Amino acid sequence: MADNANKESGKMSMADKLAAAKDAVDEAEDVLETDDLEEFEEDVEDTNDETSEDIVEVADDVEEAAEDAADEATETADAEETGAAVAAAVADVPEVSVPAFTPPDRSRTTRQAALDAVANDEIARKQRTLKYRIKRNKASYIMMGPYFILFFLFTVLPVVMSIILSFTYFNMLEFPKFNGWDNYIKLFLNDDIFLISLKNTLIFAVVTGPISYLLCLLFAWIINEFRPKVRTFLTLIFYAPSICGNAYMIWQLILSSDRYGYLNGILLKLGFINEQKLWMQDANLILPCLIVVQLWLSLGTGFLSFIAGLQTVDKSLYEAAALDGVKNRWQELWYVTLPAMKPQLMFGAVMQITQSFAVADISINLAGNPSVNYAGATVVTHLLDYGSTRFDMGYASAIATVLFLLMVGTNKLVQKLLRRVGE
Picture 1 (cartoon, rainbow, N blue to C red):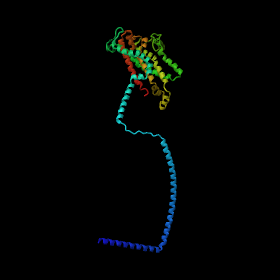
Picture 2 (picture 1 turned 45 degrees about the vertical axis):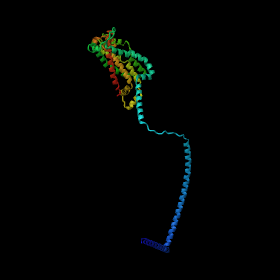
Picture 3 (picture 1 turned 90 degrees about the vertical axis):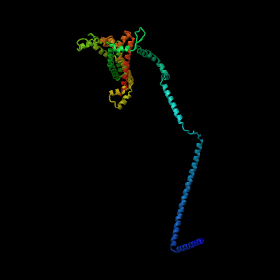
Picture 4 (picture 1 turned 180 degrees about the vertical axis):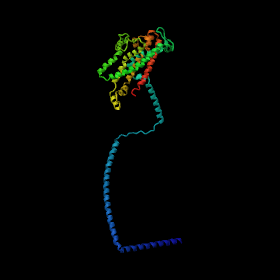
């Protein structure tokens, strides 16, 4: 029953299709018979014209594409020739073998760095040793050897022996006997003359040391401004008193206590005094007179070192200082001249300290030894008294050791002050 129904439905559908087709044919015939046929023909003609134009345009595009393809083919051929040439050139280059990358062993690198650091420290330690420096600069040490030997024998060794003998009793006849600190206890507690001489020496050092140092620097600075010939003449005039062996004779005539002494005669004539002064017999006048004479004799080696230092200052430094704002000569002296001659300043300071603490010949030749009430006594005159007259070398060595420590301490203080020059 179901199959018969499906067959009937299939037949019905075919009948419907045939009817629809017949209706379509009838409509087409009706269209052909109507006036719309002409419009349909015109549409077909327009469509044909448009199609022909499209065909022409397509043909033109095809020709252009063919020409572009030909050009590309030519370029491709040239590129192939170039590629072949490059390939041939590359073939001629020798092959370089690149090693394969291997990651570093960090443990080995750290260990090697530690070993290198230890080796460098060992090398640096060896380079700091005196043996290494002598070996490296052997020629220089050989050339300086004679001076080192003389300096050790006549400077270092006597200082060391004096320090050792200061703890002994040594009268030049018997072997030195160790007595500990007895010489120093006697020196500061029982020796009144030493205390007077120490006071006089400190006054000499405080007054003559800085004043003579500044005078040396000031005169050297002024003389340096003159022409070479005038500078040489003035340098000789200022330096001559320090090298004159009979300079004390001149001051003995000047400071003579009678009315024929130059200073007494001038002061009596001008009416400043009514009777002659006992310059070297008055305890109140001895020390001031000795200070004046010491200042007159102080323009010595330090003065020459300052002259030499001023000659070595680069002149271009003054031009640079002027651009930086230095306006006058005093600023040039402080910010340019003195910093440029610090070695000479240090040397001059050492020389002036030595001269101010080692005053002895002036006092002995002008005031005598001992002087009146020991007014002109110094540490060196007291040292000469015990060392050359009494031959108590142990006690004299103690005095020399105290003087040595005074010089060293003052020298360190002056060096610390000179480092601030130019700041």
